[in-house]
Length: 126
View 1 (cartoon, rainbow, N blue to C red):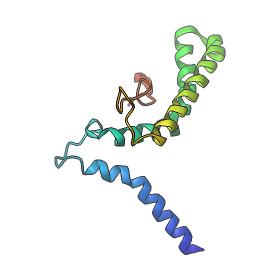
View 2: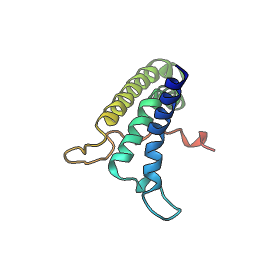
View 3: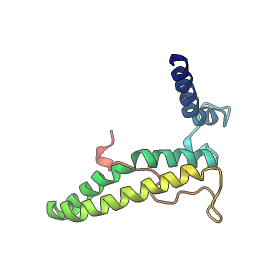
View 4: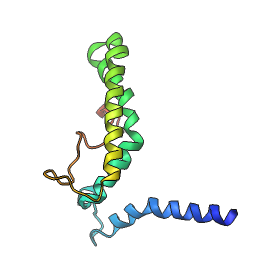
């Protein structure tokens, strides 16, 4: 039983580290950026990020509507638009994880939604 759970932990760790190892081998120089990643690797990372963190669209939409229009619109329209954005981003993230090795017909590996990742408002960034 202990051996089986150890092997499962090792396998999961290797699966989670595989994209990082692939990214590390892209260029020999020390300045490897995320934009240097080839299409499928970036698409997989984007899909995982949007699947795991797509729910953050809900509070961001509420905050954005509250800032622009006030508390009552934020409690109605902000919640509705946040739920729609969160569901869309999460669904597209799942789609990108499943189809990451295959480019889309015309756009290749470009993101299906902009911005590519969930982003905090600039005033919240350090």
